[in-house]
Image 1 (spheres, rainbow, N blue to C red):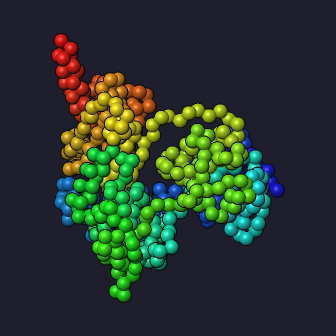
Image 2: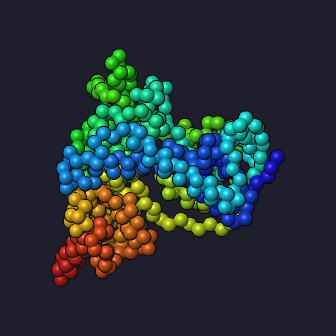
Image 3: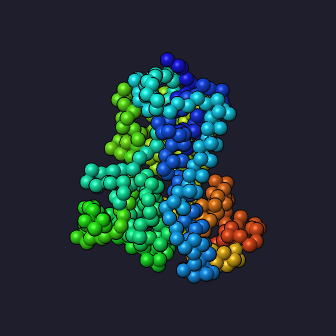
Length: 473
């Protein structure tokens, strides 16, 4: 058996970042990937494909130009699934090539095959060519990611009733679609296909969606979706899903209502891909959704030499946070010092329109009884917004009245996932409203919205200070 300092199972964001970090520290590292190509879920069925699909849809439909030319404007009149797939394959080939080069450059060994535990240090690997081998590792990092949750009562057929992985393989763009689940994945795909002029109905058993996002942002988001004729059916679950003789799909809801469409996308959660690992052999157990419990500071499991990072450990399930988790886990696993991660990280939802958030929501600020004030800017108020033809979009910042510090920033609209990083930096550096008032932003840019929102909050906070001073006299 070959001995390694660190064995990583999975080559997604957490796995590749962890493996390369350990290799840069001079450690002998092996990555085991069950797929035919490296990259994991993120590259092949998750993050990169969905964001590529979104960008392709917005480009081919002319979505970003409709503020000037009207809703009927199109760059390409007839858009096929092949149009979407062509750009996707080019992007995936590039991502795989970059990753394989990184492994080669850093002398990270990688094997294509399925691994399972023999004991806490030993793995048996069934390689894709049929060979079976065993390897041992001083430490092991589980970065196996997740797979779509597929309940037994849903008749998946890979054609009309599908999960989010299978959506990338459909042969034609449906005229109508029912999306079950208003989580991040469901909402991203629902809005992307709505931009492709598919009639979309979203079914969600909860009373609302995206509960971790600031409510004012979610309300604005829901308004925009309904304004373009998307149906949002909250507080209703899908009791029965079936194919009709005419090829349509019927979904019967818990309130007795039935909705019919060409296709059903079931996107109600994901499960950790831990079933094949034989976790019992190493003394670990996963929860009902296949997730593994870890120490949030080191990503160490209950078995000291085994670590887990990425989506398999649960929220926030982001590629960006998975990379940092993998890096921290690898450093701790090989005995290198680790630093505490910054308090605030950005969360991006690549819907249409996109949403990004960092820090506390207004609801969280209220729960903590922090005196606060908000500043809001509409993207259409910026000169750049006028140039781009933006009708919608909003940037919201929340400040402490006591310390004047920024507590949270929340953005919906074009460029939200890029703009958020200015707010993230100010949050982590403990900046105040004065930063936005006193600093200069490039003109014309959407980033000017920070200046507008900062002035909005500063004016309101000044009024409060004046009233407080008057009351003291």
